[in-house]
Length: 426
Ligand code: IMP
Image 1 (spheres, helix red, strand yellow):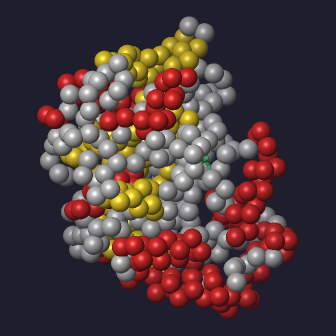
Image 2 (image 1 turned 45 degrees about the vertical axis):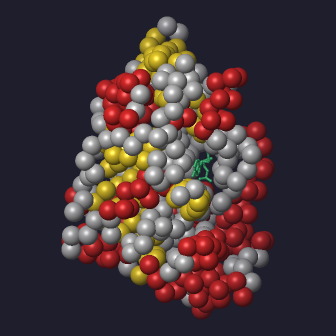
Image 3 (image 1 turned 180 degrees about the vertical axis):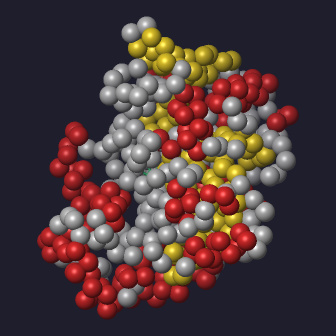
């Protein structure tokens, strides 16, 4: 049985949740391996939208075991709320959820610190989601983080916690003292413990056994390759590893057990906040992409930054993740355009760069575009390659030719039903 990793190839928000839900029709286990409460994965089934932040996006498929593996940063308060919402709206049974005992906890003071730092940084802010991801990672690396099984142990939180934060390399204990927040009220803490305690286990053993016994396991990433702490456009990155390689660290499953890597890319580019977006557009092109793609920050009316598809960064991401195939989302958003631009190189002072220049982000590069013909008709009803207009087929073909891997899944609308395989369902 395949063990497939799903990751984002751009700046996040590529539609990974939708693709995980789609592929989950054929799997036994979905295991999320990175990121934290900063993620928002949206799945629409028969017109009903469900948002996931921590719970794996396979939750709407009955019978699947869901894993929050050790590489995920757990924010227990919001995870409990998410589980309760899923229980109320979908009859979700928390017994289906396993949480890796070593997963590190995002504490309330991490969230406060993230928001305070961003505010203080003013025009130099990274533009984080404000969910405490950076400070959680700093404490983790400084060996003063709290693992979820420790967090759920009241004795540790009373006795061991202060020793832990004083042991490390950064003055987290100062924060704990100043903000006075080890955890929420007793009542909320008790509810969190009641909800999550039964989920904590050795998920690495569970996943290895599941794979060895022939189960089909899907590893779900978060954010996108260009937000990776090492390979993204640093410092405008998240504080985790978003690449396929981190599925191994994040789950405790070795690389020889991974059989395929699916990279999810949008048919154009978007970015939530600051940092390089080489193909960014303005004016009418921007308004069209924002409106047609409904590109707004989750639950707000703040538009995302948008641009044409950047094949130079896409090929970079394909290489970094050793992608087997691409799932291309939101193709329908391009339905209305006369012409579709794709960036095939960058230019600076008459010199053309077909690969990512090492100083991109520090100096300005101009995108070099190939202009393709638009299809000017709706592809939202397409359910296979033959249903797509010839110009849309040509668009897919052009992308495949440039990045050197096949597109195997296409999405032409928000609903689960508007997703299809281009060939075999593998
Ligand atoms: P953080 O992960 O909250 O620290 O934010 C760091 C950077 O990653 C910021 O540019 C965020 O906008 C971006 N980011 C984090 N999570 C997501 C996501 O799920 N989608 C898109 N961008 C994200």
